[in-house]
Length: 484
Image (cartoon, rainbow, N blue to C red):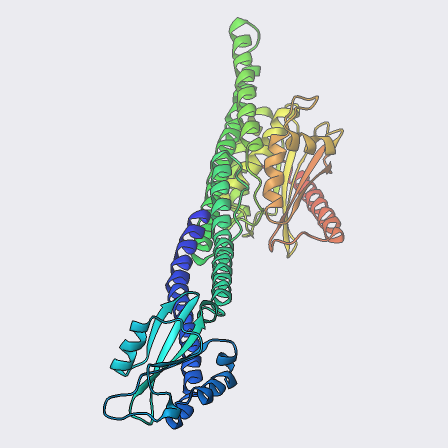
């Protein structure tokens, strides 16, 4: 495209230069010729007064030599012989025609001008001769010949043509340079757009195009960037959905694993437990692969929201039935009023199932656990506590979710990774510590306005959550029975 624009501009400019320069060059040549012959006519007119007074050879010779062209030998006077009607006296030199100066024109050309009575230009050796008829006092017609050298006829023409050629070349070069710059402005955005499309097709989803250049290419860049964002979002949603759906399979797998553990001994029981373990491994692989391939996008709050209390009550109803079968004491606090959070209902349910599934998976049967919810004004704190053996290295547990590696306990940390992403999408965070029940406490800080809480406020939330859990525990013990 760039070279095509240059060729078009070169052709158009060349045609314009030729259309103007050639006629202008011819006009300049004609003007130079007219100027030379006009000067010759003026020089021929300087001898006319003398011819109107006398035809004496000596007088005419002095008059001719007194002029500039006559002094250079470029002026001649041709006086005809006397007519029959009127005779010259002896001083007039009666007889043949009188020629003064150097003759260059042919006699027949001189005679033709004398008979026609009109000036004429004839070509002679080395230039041109202007033949100007002049009336004598005797009524005869004399012819004044002025020689115009060829150099005077074309004087200044070559210089003018060179200047025109230089101007034409400068115009062509300038137009080509301008066309090249314009072509660059058009070609570079188009090349960037083509390169970005190729990169996007090769899987580099972070490729974007600068929105610059002509209006049409800017519109194309805006459309491309919007399309790329949509592709990234669609792929992210697809992979997140695959990961979440796979992770939700771990909830019934946990129940299946617990039931398989109660089958006793025997080949069928061992095969069932091995199959469950293999199924759990495959599900973990699917979750880990989907999350590792997820493109990096800017985080932000989810546009959908839900009532955290309602979701927690619903999921606790499911897990309480399984806890009752294993003899686990369950405590639930802080869900007696509506608590709106900027998290989609499926995401919060998946996060809670991940934490509770870890409790059933990594703590012995009969281990109590509790879920406490606290609303602190600018955030919602969800505490999931258990009375199990606890986590020796909380930082390593969180790192397993980020890296996808399994820890010494066999956990991949993918459940904690789901919870952490839910919290961070609202500007909150995830912490692991020691619970009031003696085991592990997972604290989810969910921001309500997308701002990360201050350090002091987070410590306050932790103390408030523990205090609520302690109060609920004392209340439940006083009530003489677990809350299922």
